[in-house]
Length: 61
Image (cartoon, rainbow, N blue to C red; front, side, top):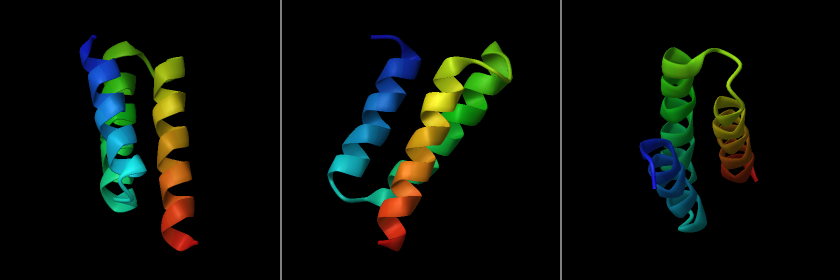
């Protein structure tokens, strides 16, 4: 498992455990790091930012 997959799994685990604020922070940092290393439009960054949105939605509901 590479670093991105590992970090995505950590964020997903936080989300599944109900720690949505931590999950949102992990997804956001991962998305920004992916953009910095692999370009602004890397599909993995989009997936990470979708995780941010999903986590925030769960915080507010």
